[in-house]
Image (cartoon, rainbow, N blue to C red; front, side, top):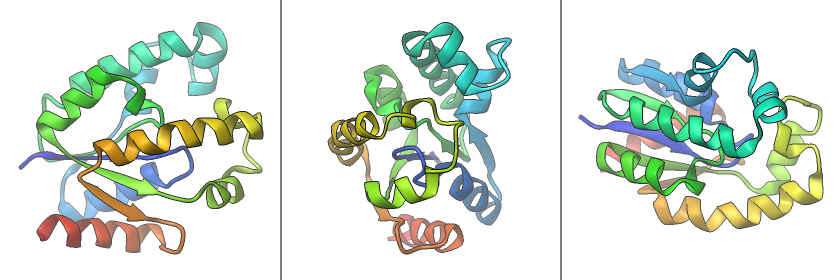
Amino acid sequence: MKNIALIGFMGSGKSTVAAILAKKLGWEWREIDNDILCLTEHSSINAIFENLGEVHFRELETKSVMDAVKKSNQVISCGGGVVASPEAMAALQQNSIIVFLHADFKTITQRLIHTDSRPLFRDMEKAAVLYAQRLPLYKKHAVIEVMTDELTPDETADAIIREIKK
């Protein structure tokens, strides 16, 4: 079986849902952000952005995705910006069912308003522009789209399983 790759904007629930989905399927959970951290001496994604910059972070992200897809039967939680990398998306498309966890920007704002661990979410106006830019890319690459605004992470995982079985 292929992998399942979760894409979506920061705060859409990718990491939480990936862990639940992997457990339900008996698969490995692969967190791309953790893979990126293993490639650096930094302790957080925020630190990578601050010290190395977004361009270098995206290069590490692409490398991590390309490594991840060499295995199967994984639920891969991708970073929100993975859709900006044609190489990463091509690799995911070859070996993964790509699922877009779609949450409205208002929902994401409510989820992330009190966190400072999201480097691209510090400027709300910039984040809204980024969301608008990425939304068509998420839709373009996804085989399955699940609206997560009204669902718990467990319900979201169940919805993904139902869609995959169709």
